[in-house]
Image 1 (cartoon, helix red, strand yellow):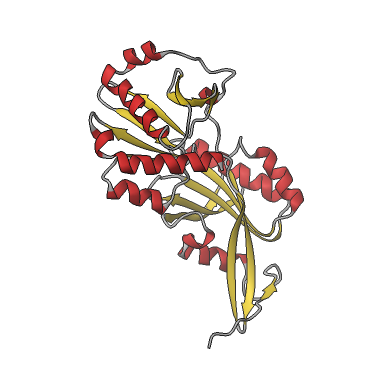
Image 2 (cartoon, rainbow, N blue to C red; image 1 turned 180 degrees about the horizontal axis):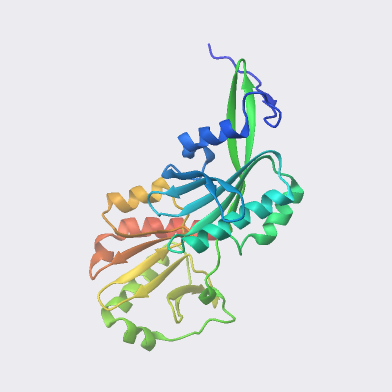
Length: 290
């Protein structure tokens, strides 16, 4: 019969065996343990920075190519840790602007004061904070990584209703075609099968959704000449990936910076893929309005 035990929390700061170097090697061997995805691979460790020390770990997502500049600290976070993490992120993004970059802080004790300070940067600097806890089980020690501050998705400027340029249907008929703009109408019909009173809102960079005059862009549409791109505002997940793969949708990739999936539809595809599209629309609406 299984036995429940109460693990003992231990501090790694002064532990004789589990030094920062040991933890660093453990993460390097299996990057998935920190909770940023199963597709992370190690690009470098102890990476020299010009006049700024060494970056603990540089990871890259195999699927999106996004890079994570990771700083590890045992014990409490402090001001120098914040500055160092942001400085390394800034250096790397300037050296390699072809990649999307995210700063990551991993520490044993992430205080409320630290979170308050870091939250001031969130929305301007892509920043994730992960708390690392160690628990002793008999003669073994296990590590648990918990994301305590997630990156705040940056809003597109054209989503700001005070500054965006509102257009009309004729504008989009010129950018796309009658056929591709009517595909946006089809998507609206699907939306209104499970939520009421939505309408299309024609903006300069996309066709969005509005209800009672208020924008609610859980999905947006971009008609082109030969197809229409639909962007679903959803966090990346295996469930969504499986829906896309199982229904052979034309996946244009996931944009982690804006938190959205892009899928391309050609003429006639919306009718053929209606069930899968409806599922994604419902998920996006729940995600936006939860």
